[in-house]
Length: 87
Picture 1 (cartoon, one colour):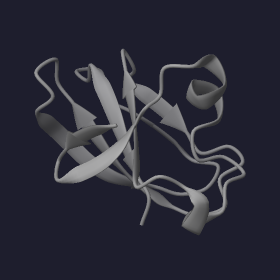
Picture 2 (cartoon, rainbow, N blue to C red):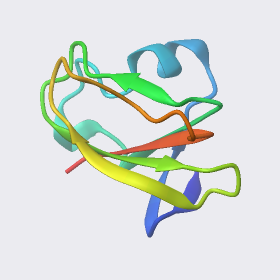
Picture 3 (cartoon, rainbow, N blue to C red):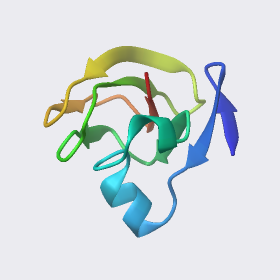
Picture 4 (tube, rainbow, N blue to C red):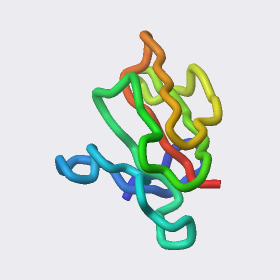
């Protein structure tokens, strides 16, 4: 678990968690957040609900925040990590 932006969440280190994220998950069964280090783009393929994204720089400072809808795509060239937050 990691605490960033006032949120406790999981660090997505394993391949399956990095691949799926919140895809196909029910909202109430998801962790509050997932942190993807070394990542600057994410997709919403298979997601059942919208999520909030926080793009982070190399010092874990927020540089952009936006909503990702199911089957959407988002990226930020300057990001070193992405924090996905469930609503």
